[in-house]
Length: 461
Image (tube, rainbow, N blue to C red):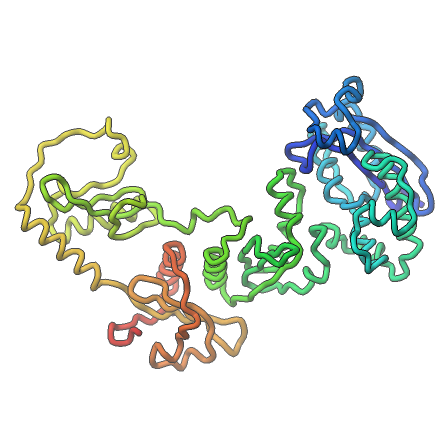
């Protein structure tokens, strides 16, 4: 049998649960030719970092035992040549694989290999067990472990389990797994069937944990391709490994368009606040036009960063938009420039402010102008209906923008035939709107005006 058909059955001990902040303390590799072990390798490894006491108690590996043993850099060449060209096999394979990829890369070796996970294979070939941990499987399969939580002891038990899997693999699950190898890129708790049911269409996908709780929501032009990309490559950070290990099931909703996917994603994140959706700041505005009264009674306008305590008139994504909006008000209503403050980094630093002699208009006249501006801004709100393609040929998607706010979005049959807003908009589609959602809808409406119908005040609900 050639080298590619050999299996490297591996177990490691480490200083922690994730490769990014932990190191290997012991490695065992058993080369299996499909019938028996033909080569053995084992070494303790000096991690050059502390070993938590709980892990010392679990493994029995203490700092004193590792004081005079080689570092991983010193054994990297041997490990690389043992693994190179072999099929990598381990119990919960992504754990061992991620550590070895990282350690070998740091030692100067670019290594990757096809993988097989004895947890996944056991679930298929030996279904019905309460637990698929190595310890529990060894009990029910009558496999002895001479040294539990030591690399060679666990590797030898994994070899025996692997041999039983080979002997009982009547449905050729092992060959099937190697043929596509997608399954062994998936999180341990996520079944291949869950992944295979995903469509290659635009929409959102929802990751849930074993208890069914939503832990992440994402959007994609190709749902299946985007989901798979979450599991590609090896990231050693604790946060990523916790994220991957938490995923047990995947739901999805098709959207027809990327804009609808963006809105659906944001809506669900705002509703459930999944623990692994970290980039939530993009849903909030960054700048605002605020009003305040100075000590002399003048109502002043200023562009500033968004603050909870400020009396905000309007929000903006960029400082350029905010400053331009104030400049337009200044010109249109002939406001006193000395009573308006544009944003610049210098305005945030009190030491950079310069005291200038102000020429002020009449207090009553100025404040009446400000009141008139606010009245005008209220009457200038935008309302429109945006009709786009739906999830299939029998429907359209719609977005209802009402009085400068995103009011509802959803799907409707034959929207082209509508004459009243009520013909399209359903109150069940009313959404939890925010600045980000409104911003992307307005941007899209500007890009595709042919999809937008402006609504007069009489047509608005």
